[in-house]
Length: 271
Image 1 (cartoon, rainbow, N blue to C red):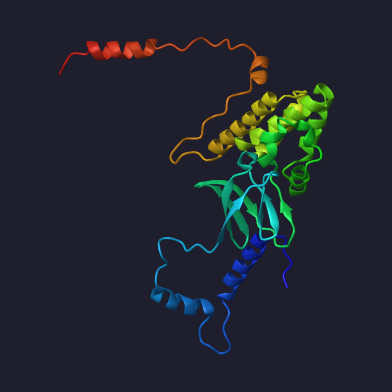
Image 2 (tube, rainbow, N blue to C red):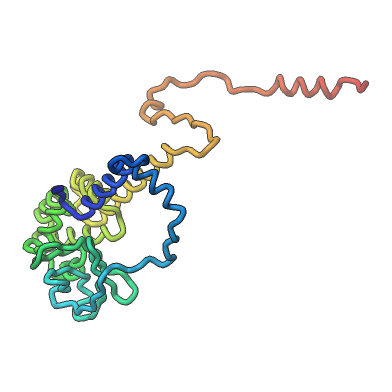
């Protein structure tokens, strides 16, 4: 029996087994499984253009904790949906929640009964008004366990609390977490580390450093993937190196010899 952490890992393992099984022969048959399927595949009817929905649809009401209950398990949705009805599509490995036609939440499905899966981002709208509720929040514990709330977050939070006080420092952290809706997680962590190193303990400073990290990544990708037919450019010397170079005493280039050739060609008699 395979031991895996998630259903996605198990599915990937099964796909790998399928590929390896194509080279197997069943008893004394002359062809492999892959060869038999290659002969059968052209005879198969094409799949329908619209995929068949295999999930189970639920219409559920969001409770006061900003959660919905699906088959004995609870999942979070954004706090703005408290008291409203939403649609939840339950699949074998995941749950997708819709408000009308808009997707508002996506979770990995809980297999055991009586579990709870909370997304910290869903509660930020309320926590920014009540920052004192963040330290003991279950959603924060789950974010730490999942690696979304890193030690860098904790270090920046501690420094912000020392500089601004518990309430304002925590609110500054929540504002940083809200930046995650617009910035990639890895760039945000890089921005937090850079801001912590310089003692910049505001959300604006973290946003600036995170965008610098994003721009640096974009520049690196563009430099590593030159366009076809382009020539390799020469990198300029750093300013510190140029400052230590001796002055250039060579005379400026002259075009006098070129002008002399033009005069000789102009004065030459026509044949």
